[in-house]
Length: 311
Image 1 (cartoon, helix red, strand yellow):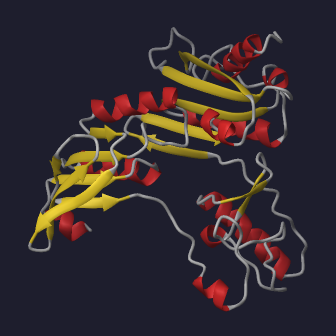
Image 2 (cartoon, one colour):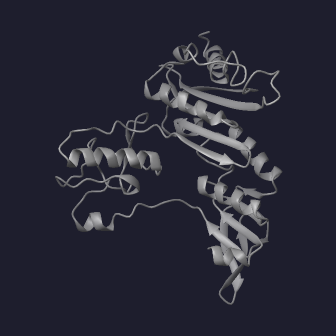
Image 3 (cartoon, helix red, strand yellow):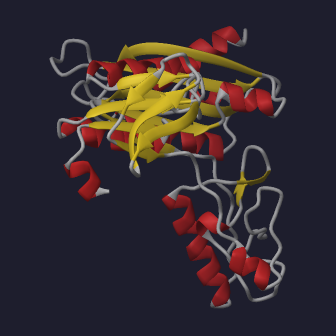
């Protein structure tokens, strides 16, 4: 890849997921012309559209050419070299010297099938809470194995290094005869997009709808510290709660600097099964250089409560 990029100026990236956005920033920072294609109507399909729009503006502010809702139909070229990308969005053929793909992951389970190990509905290796397969004493962890989603309460595909590491620890403990359970994941991730920090945990509104979970959501725009500090910058927080139980099941944060750390608070609340009214009163640290008297996470929780007619 490095060799191809040395001679290339125009780079097309197909897929605007985590890797696609990280690569776009890297290449843009070294002077490449980057064109990012995404077949969904927004970047980062795992977050909600109103939050994705903030990220899209940031990409365009730094000069990334963005085509969303643009399913790639073909790569065009001659003499074994690509020179363009044809998408279904009516753009014609976008010029490209190099094309990079970020279109997802498929678990490699060939060896598992040969060994008689069962795979689940996701296509990954089916494991129990001890990370053990259907074959006794054979364990699986990481990208090849299913991950138990603590919100959906069923196995999913979840390709995150932190989760893989925890699964590996659990598998190792059980191989060493120390019984340990993997308690599941809530899908907490963080990403740098130029100057922005982007965090998400739990379910997005769209993911909740796909699970037929009635939800209420609220989004706020605030400052990440006291307004009179010259370093105060905007932060956007969105919270999603299950309508009936009032439990927090999703959160998204976009901001600057350490804004993404608030997603860890939300992930903890989701893991603990906290209701929104409980989150709204959680005791968070405050000092003007580091935050607001009312943390944006609490402000979002209060707005969500009002929308749920519980305030």
